[in-house]
Image (cartoon, rainbow, N blue to C red; front, side, top):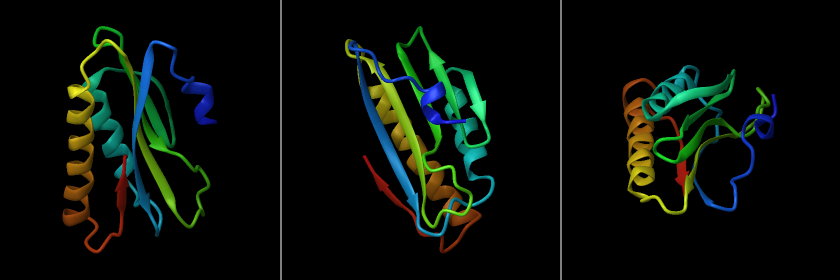
Length: 123
């Protein structure tokens, strides 16, 4: 399922922020599931598919996407995205909290389950 089908563009009253994690050797098995579980702390699932989840929280004024950008299983590089569309009138502190948590999750998994796993982060 294309990400665009479940992740419409941000509206004129929203701003989009995203963190991308690149895995040169591909995303390890099970890591996306843990990322999706982390994302569900922040709202309820609106759409879920093999490569990710869209979570919404209308009360807090944001939508977030956690999933793989390139869905080809044999891709040389996996790009995992954690994106947030948030109302422009809201504080961005919740977004930075989410990004810190995602980075900590990946680093913890890298040390515990996938030692030597190469990944890079970008905002």
